[in-house]
Image (spheres, rainbow, N blue to C red):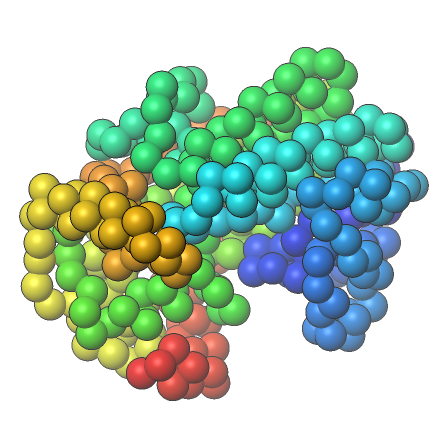
Length: 337
């Protein structure tokens, strides 16, 4: 048995698109499942199925004759209705699992996040044995944790599946992390300690890990049900990394700092105001964001190294060089600067 017919949910998204490109390079038959049509995928010769992850029939039909699914699509962010996150991240994942089972899909690689185990404290050199917290400050990590549990249960029931937890994905074509920092460059301040460390991962390395997981699962079914942290394997100060992004955009470094307590209180206040007034856009701060910004988040990736043979092929320095070239071509005016 080998990998031949592959489908990527969210294949037109940031990570999904890089996974698609790398799969095309391996001469596989690649299909993207997304709500939108992407001209850039058409140019790559990728088959596209438009559908809604929350629609069980759409997913069931899309998975017909597929042998490997990369479930990358999700609703990210720090703000929004709980139901909005639940429908995509939980119901969507349940539909993916049921479609895999009904279509006898051989392998499922599920994209998760380290935020599912964030308990509001510093997380340093932790491995995959860390338990889920009892409560969450935001619907994204809570619903992603619920999705993980569904995949683990499915693996226990016989579906060959691996869960990956990439942390802070960045690189050219980023539509979330880097743009968020650049667009707030003039008003963004450091929160909490200056020396707390975080993991990040360059998008190509995250894509490589997904493909490695599928290939290893092909030959070693004992890996099914496993969870893996993946990163650049070099924890860095989040503020040093933020300044590196700003430097890549030829913008000055961050100035000013607020305490963790002040940021948390501001987040609580903004959440109250935004909920009361029904404001849909992201608040300047939330309690979840304040806690994440004021704590360390870096993880031991020995399991991914040993089981998957994962190692970051693109260094942070090289990644920043590529990001700078892309930002220069894009222009910071794209971010309102």
